[in-house]
Length: 412
Figure: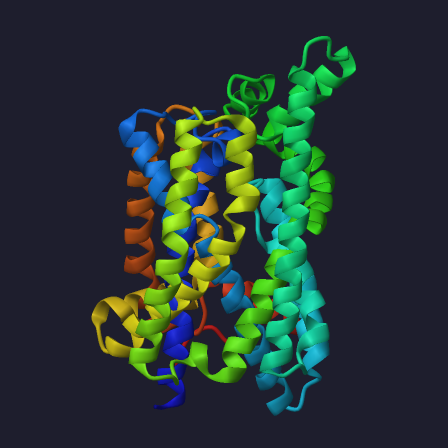
């Protein structure tokens, strides 16, 4: 297998991941943010819309972001290895890249969309630097430690929310406790709250009003990122580093082994995810139950299924390496940064008040049509562009900023 053959696995899986992430992000683009956690908050709970939510929850939610984080960790090591081979200081190169990623992510959050993942990736990518010299077993051990810590934290959060809601619902509950419980439930995605009305008002307004709102949100978002997302994202990055060092993510393992891992991972993960989805629906989308299932109880199975997705896609790419479709998906993965930021630009234009103003005006099933259209655009533009140019536009910008000089763009 040649070097280019090996890297098509990273590119193709990254392409599948950036496309898959949009299945979940489309809710954040098109509806009040409470809908991201609780389908009853917005987007419809009729059989069709509930079915779309359930499929995404069971099969994709958290797994695509996990897959993207795994690839980030693997790619980070590759960049550092190339920098060292070129006689550069790999740590300095990496830290410079993370600093500019933070800046670009902050601009993305403030100017376009509150659901940015680049800022947490910059933070976790910086922390991951402490683990680059660990071997595969050490990386896996540290990943497991971080997974367990995150799971325990999420259980405490969900349990605390449940206990507070129960005390507030008891006869004669203190008014301050009731008010605090209402605010807590609203943050968990409770339908019909003032927060939803406020979200509709803001995102149906002009660009400057949205930017001002995001400027206010950004500090709190940064704190919540450090508190809630660092542990699991960093763990996924360490898993990706271990996958690279073992040759797993480069497609060096036998196809039959990838298939076996994928089947076992999905066999372990899918039944409990289905059970959680059914529990949520039977509860009438109870706010605390829905939050616990989304944020905490599904987490162990999300990790298992992320590995399953990685193995399954590796089997697909290794066994169909010469497929034209795989080539286009790999191109979308090579331009994943551009596709990610470009998606934010297109979707906020479609849904926000400064563009077409469709925010809060479609249901969850209809939102999938926008996802499929965006997939088509990614697959159509990425390969012809990369047949002519070395990088996607955003990749070129990031690379030029990180290396402090304009990078050659056109292929000779």
